[in-house]
Length: 305
Image (cartoon, rainbow, N blue to C red; front, top):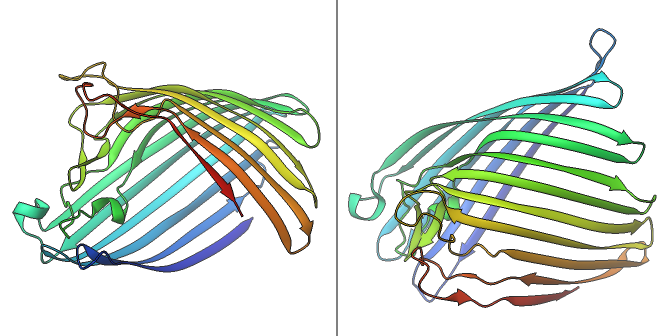
């Protein structure tokens, strides 16, 4: 078996001409155990562990803010091989989120403290269709607890009523190692999400109606050891409201298309140059749930380093 323990500490501060100045401190740890021992002559891999994080936000703006949150998660996942080229996987993750802000008032924060329990799971099938290819299917009830920065608003207060996103997703695709240096992958996915977190006016809120996302992703990448790498990644997603008065309308700020081109070349052991281009397709303006405000135009970004 393999065991690992990781710990991290981070500190960020933002100054904005005296308005909504704030800092964020985060202390985290992660525990992980991997047991690859077989079971009754069959190959088996069991992974378990936990993730723990403590966030602190202190802000000075229109209202004083002193926010603390603890997030703890435990997880377990097992992959069993009844045949050499076929495996079945199943896992579960359970978490608890506890937050408190002694300076919060109902008008700005909704409530002074909040506690929430969240659970997710996963089942999957994997088939090694050939020596260099794999076909997979996964189904998962999932959740996303809001990050500390997602709780914060420009008023200097945290939205203590912000709930975790919860949903179900399914994805299927294949991975193909064309040569020793070239890999190709393609995935189809579909999901339905409740309590989606979106930005509204001065902070994030939960959508009251469910949303759905259907789309595809593909990637073609080349890499050569001690030389460099290059690739192209593309995704298409159709994100719409699934119920309510906006049923069928596009979800704001979700671009249908994304494209990324990247390359890195190694000149010596300690020096490399990399560059890339990212294209983001048109999307609805934030807050335009009725679909009447036009589209934010597509744009591109170049990177060089």
